[in-house]
Image 1: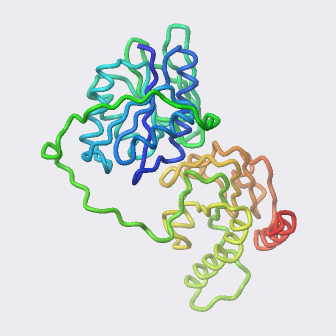
Image 2: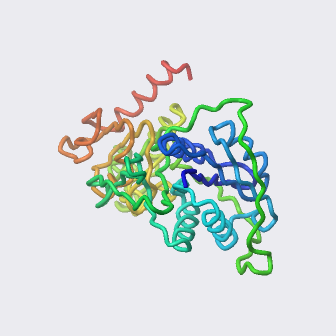
Image 3: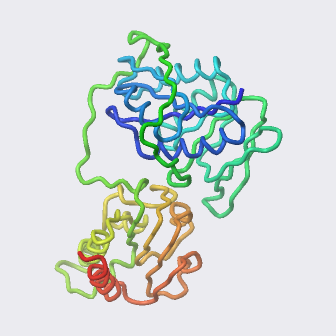
Length: 346
């Protein structure tokens, strides 16, 4: 009981990039426990994804390319994972804390009567073989260390961008073993008819740089049509388009927002960062006109570098920022964008 399983999440036959971060976290546990780092690849194009997993550090791969696993459905995925855990008794099972990763590991942990730790940001193995994981609590205000009895398999989901993926090595291979599915199609209640792509969505979770706007975006000195209420919304939308987006474009960044900005109708919910939005951990987070309420901090406090731009020098965001600029964002952001264009040759 020393192997470390890592579920490689895929969509339409391609691995999600964050899955390689899960392999990076799994490598830390496998090295200390002396077990094999085993990739679990289910569904469409599984053999090709298993080959990629080998290049990203997996020494073994358990593969099932059965048609019942083409699209993610909890019943067949959980049944197969549970069977593999019962047969191999791994030290731990890891996945990225996406909606699917949390759902799959929680179901299998329940089926095997095992413990589970969610959304962890660091891992360590103790002398008795138990894994100690660090995760945030109380909306990110404190960090807690959690451990599970070393006697059983430990299910763990990791926070995206919290672990570095292993360095890819071209030509490295994992020993691949094909496994059979557990459920047949007539035993699966859920059916997937189709996927519909959403136009204009933003992938904040994987973004290395995020430029976010808050309620302060409404303080646009431009005149706007309509009554006072309409004018405030118009100014804020204009601000996201004319000062936030250009900076994001220069940096190759995603655009985020606080809940206040989303609730006010300045920008769609898909951009919301915080306790009730996306939890992000980019290398650089630029907060523009965001006061830094605890609900927003819960979604971005693990960012590597935080830059705050706000008129209010007492705004809570400055307490967690590495760099802070006190002033009008409508003066600072255009100047910053222009200077970055020069320096980056854009």
